Amino acid sequence: MNSTRQPVAEVVVALTGGVKEDAREVFGALRSAYGCDRAADDVPKEVPGAGDRPTVWIATFDASDVRARPARPVRLTAPVVATLQGGYAAVDSLRGSLASAFTVREVGTAYGDQEEEVQLRLESRT
Image (cartoon, rainbow, N blue to C red):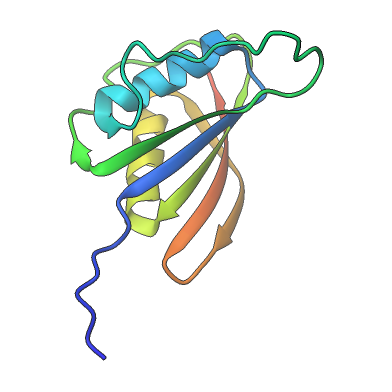
């Protein structure tokens, strides 16, 4: 069977381990480079009454809708864990954009037939 299916261009990005300001910076850097399912004014917010429960911020980016690469390093208050899930080329593209704005360390990877999931630790560049 011949398939004309295109590689998956959407990448779901989940952020944990940081504060809303850090999530805003990470999503802002990615939003400047790719189309996003969230409007520019839809910024991460704290959940009232969450207490000590971990917060996860999620957005979907379209790696086929390339705008520009983040030009400058972005400052974070603490390391943020970013989990990227999508097609191989799309995830690689987002990882490259993140590397232009942050120090990126790969924490783990899971491979599938058409997609991969990569967990990255993002830190401010020193």
